[in-house]
Length: 507
Image: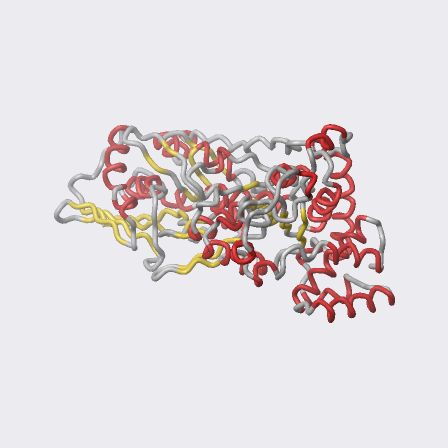
């Protein structure tokens, strides 16, 4: 009886716990048994491994009883990532490979029937988990997956094309042919995208966009059709500061959990997600078995834009309340639970009423035809608790075409982005995080008011009947306005501007 152990990793949400692939070859009736809470995709590896070994020129032990155990037994395993470890375990248990050399590596990869290695999902998540665990082993992955995993510094990642190439690298002495070190995916400079200069007029909305970018604040744009709400939202990513290394790795790891994988992800760019208004709550927050990230997690570190927000299902919108507050989402199913990060910058756009022309000036030539009940019902699709979690509410007014043609070009994205970067840097130096992320315990120390501003805040809060959350959000917005003005203390002018950006809709 022979026994070999090969190390690999499973996917559990964004985590990748270690899995020991134990392979035993014993005498008895020939069989190939796979245990350890394996999904159907994993059980199908028996046929892929058998064909891959034979096509690669290795003898398959047909006359042996093969038992493969994926430990720990209570951790679900899915996908074809265990094909390569199982094949190597069979060879090591049969004496063709040195178990000690095999144990110095970690392997993951799906095998084709010809013995070629195919990419696996979550390669970057796997590498991040290995770094957190202080991995001293060499990580061996298919070439495309290895390039994604190589983004994580401090790991020895090797790229493999075939099963035969992996086996050759594990041979003893001079017979071994080392696998090449994986080269990271190219880091493409973040494109600025559409320029803010192209949006004519809308000075108040542009100012709100700048404040949102500088402090990481959520933003609601309310206005008639065609006033530039979507144009403004599309230009927000071009104003944001570049992500740091940890933010870029977390975003790329989440993208790698999707079907497209990390190969399609340009490392270092902030993600922008804009789901259609027919998206369900599961599409937004994630779900399935095993749990997969939804749009809010795929927007982690970037922007989530919901156009025509009241048209989204009520359940989908209400599902945003917790992640807007905590920056994460926990998906619970009967047998499994997964937590994904969801720290995104939320931008919503909507019409003020079903027809869209409520409050439009007479000079525009349009008038609202909706009843008060219809307006209240339409605006009520955004609940008070959800509105309470949106930092900025801005009215985007309509202007006649003649005025738009006469307006000069506004300030470009480059100049605004420079001010945003300076204000963001001031916040990081002061408190180590964006102003929007300040918790209640740090409001007093980081959002200091002068005497006049403190009196103004008390009277405004009492008069408007604000909740504690809304008051704190107003103070954080005022802190961002002060940072844009390079002011250490929040003045009445900063607080007054923040107050003007709070109440377009009742909430």
